[in-house]
Amino acid sequence: LVAFFLYLDLFYRPVRMLSGAWEQMQEALAGADRVAELLAEEPDVVERPGAVDLTARVEGALAFHDVSFRYERGDMVLEHIDLQIPPNTVVALVGPTGVGKTTLAGLIPRFYDVCEGSITLDGHDIRDLTLKSLRRQLSIVLQDVFLFHGTARENILFGSPGAGDEAIVQAAVVANAHEFIVQLPDGYDTMIGERGVKLSGGQKQRLAIARAVLKDAPVLILDEATSSVDTETELLIQQALERLMVGRTTLIIAHRLSTIRNADVIVVLEGNSIKEIGTHEELLARDGLYRHLNLVQERI
Image (cartoon, rainbow, N blue to C red; front, top):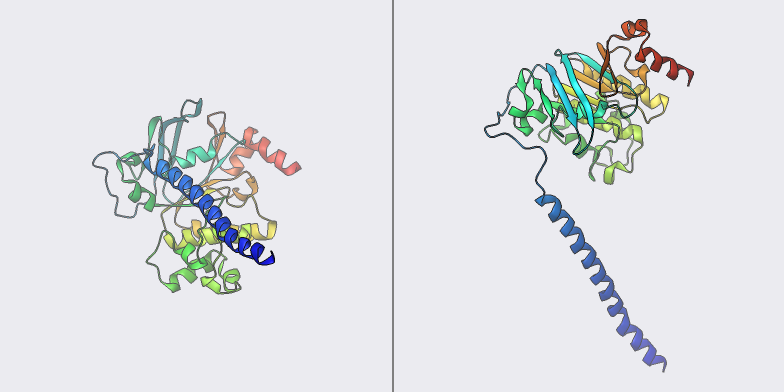
């Protein structure tokens, strides 16, 4: 009888394994179907016939000409935005949450297209450029940094795959990332996990800054780049960003107004349009929305 049950267990064990493998295969097939559906979708943003491949490095002059935008079947998020940004200018976008700051910045790399008006880069309507050549001119550092399952080196190289080791290290030094990278178990060859799970929030952001330094694009977009880190880490990131912004047209989006006081121009958004434009000192003197936002943050 004991032998019977032993043989019975030997029989059922592969059956159970086969059943588990079948379930995994069904899950994989369902996932493959979802991937196929995604790949089959037509992109919302497409290149125009005969789009220009912008091969030369641009100076970085950005201009919004009477730009309006709404998400599909929604109300207008932005209306009649007119804004001229000369090359090598640092422009900060501020305003209450949900006012359209990130949306405005997202129009530049054509994550979505304007509904009315146009955006130009060095006089070129960005819709007349190939997406690849447009985005080659841009570096973006987001609050929610996207890192790949790979090494620290590979994540810095993303966007600049031909760079050598010396350039990678130099970029990490500029980004205040070299010190923590060399302390990782395998240094630059350390696997950082899916989405950088083995790194802290500040380390992820400095790795993203190193990536932007290495790419060396003339236009830089910083979206909430220091809003989720401690004070010491924020200082390291701010130092890195100040080095990165030199010689570039920079668009900064930040809720912490203390981080953008030295911007060349501050654009205050309210509702769905531009409310105020000026320097930090000019806007404080006007006793408008920007001054109110500063007073509120000083009390916190």
